[in-house]
View: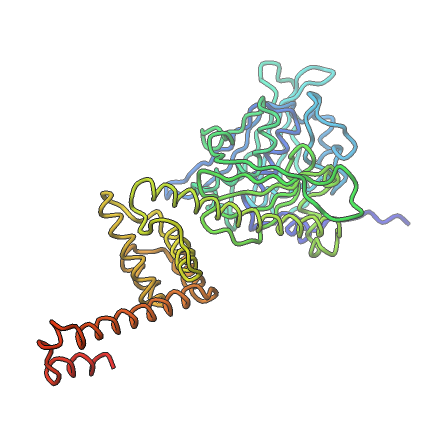
Length: 456
């Protein structure tokens, strides 16, 4: 007896990963790029109420020959790309596992592929349709299509859980981040999002690249860590695991705290060429792939230290600018340890609210002086004071509160300020009581007593 394997709709639904519509769009774009497309266009169609009624991904690639439709769509897994060296033009291939066609269910309940391709008998056209809840593909061979250009148009309609998220502006930036390394490597490939070209060069602010150390026992060359800081804020910070070329394989959250930095991190290594997000469906990657787990841990450790260095350098640059403008409320270098502590605390707080001081040079200097005095007198009231003064965001308020909770600098500054105030008061009192001119004018009961009873 031979028992054929039956793919049930429940498993197809799991592979579809319906809560990640952008990931589904990305898979369709990769399919287009794997077909040697030089132009890929992603478009959204809207209904009368402004909702997304259809998602369309069109390319000018090689298309799907009618003769290979059954092979391409019949099985689950085992893509032809696994054994291929690359595309016909020599580009790196992305797909490996043969799951991508089911990802379309994250974009709609109905899908159609209209494809024109060249074959031994000339140019032909084929239409493939798929419906949610089914495990069969309907194929319509349209025959000769000599007058049409090669390429594939995928159209998704019907209900999908989070399809409306695609209409949000940050989606374009997130897709740019995921494709950035590939588009930089192969500039002949153009990807358009709702009529706008995805151009990593326009949105990249800074790039940093270095070998990633995994410790002893690692083959050379090891993984490469690439950090890209963006001019525009992405929806979330991601750590993208890629092959050596930069083709994105696995999407992970960055998993670090780096306030005020908008970035995407890439780990590039030829050992990850065979991975996809689908390898992570059944559990944590640290257990399913120890090498990937070690690499991700090393990448996150380095990211933390890198952004600490960037924060320190950014603070130095900002302070130098304030000194040059004449708005920095300190002069010279701090000498005593408590002065160093106060300066460090001030720099941390001032950098946090650096985007807020506005107006003339004198107005900004006044705000800086107020900030310094508030830090000296009532450091634990600083979050409230700064919120009143600058209207901080929730993230900034949380960071400020965390700064004063975890650092002893604020307490040290406050203690120093209190000690200096008492010394100044004692010096003034000594003058009032013993200076020849003031001692004869000072009255004890109605002046000295009134002063001391409030500041005993």
